[in-house]
Length: 568
Image (cartoon, rainbow, N blue to C red; front, side):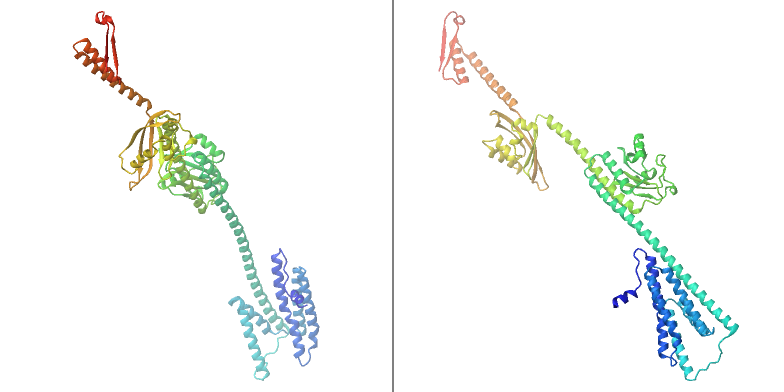
């Protein structure tokens, strides 16, 4: 029951209609104040010695009207409720006027006038203070009047005088109320205007935050993709298209310096305008236009209104450009070019956009540097691979920290082992090359790495996979750190089997020729044929390593006599 009464005396809330809810709350506040009238009349009935029964009908009527007003308000008929309460106020005034036979005391109107004026001049708390002062003063005067200290000295105004005085005071109060309402309405209109502007600003900020969030996400995505793009042309195309889509710009393009570093060449541009300028080979000299200035000064440039910038260069292919921003693509002191964006709305490119573009341009600069380094490394790798593949030597590279060894295809062909037979460990292939003396071979390498050997240049005979024996010449060089400790070793293996065999053949023939020359000299020193034959048989036996040697001559060589000589 109590909850129902409390809800009835609480202003209703109309979902989705803020204005109606506000009006209903104000009306309920006024109705609550007016409930004081029947309460006051009830107090007068109780306290008056004469009973004042004449106020009972008005108290009942006012209570019924106020209850009806609350019902009408809860039904949502706010306009009708306002009209009813104003009509009730007017009827109350008329009833009181009739009861006083038109004799309204001016002090009553002046009291209302003073309270309203205090609120206008001194602020919202002044009316209550003024009302309190008036109540205290009135009570004191009535008390003094009851004690006989103060007597009535002026008769109530009647007739024409009553009309004039009452009309003037009422009109003045009306003007004051109009002024109050006007100020309140102005303040309310201003508040509503500010609320609309705040709402629009909120919507705009939310949209801008949404756009910037999307732009940041796209910027992060572009940065992630840039790391995997190593072709400068593909990189530039990806950047301009992603930037235009993310920031909703009218146009985006990238200029990169030529090899001479004097002209900025258009590398990528969006839309048909970009394609046409690419077809024309569009370029700008350093320092000319916004793009040239940004690249030369290494500073970003923002022009919110291109019509107000004397250094802006119009482009017939981009007639709708109204704002432009250019950020240099720079890393350290190296300037690669510039990223240029244009918009078809004035003041639609903001400083925070430039900050995002600068971050993106830095990523582009890093990616371009990586792309160029990769290109140079690829070129060097191709040259190195061509040299290695075309070389007659087998190249190897040994990382001492990881114990991994790189073998060129020629090296594997020399030793005869396949990829699956090598574990890229130095000891592994030494065991294959030197199955009988691998420990000695490793010791030789370790002596070199320890600095005991000045050079690593040795020849050795190894057992080939096909069971043949070949000769290898191994050369190597160690790379050492600041302390002299080796951390890498590289070198080559050369198959010198043919040259070794040729060298051995030449040496054998030289020894044979030397033996022949010696035998010839000793034979020439003999005095008889028998002595000469004896020397020949003996020396041939020594040269050939034979214990017995037989020398026989044809009879015709000795004048028809056979001759045989045996040397032990």
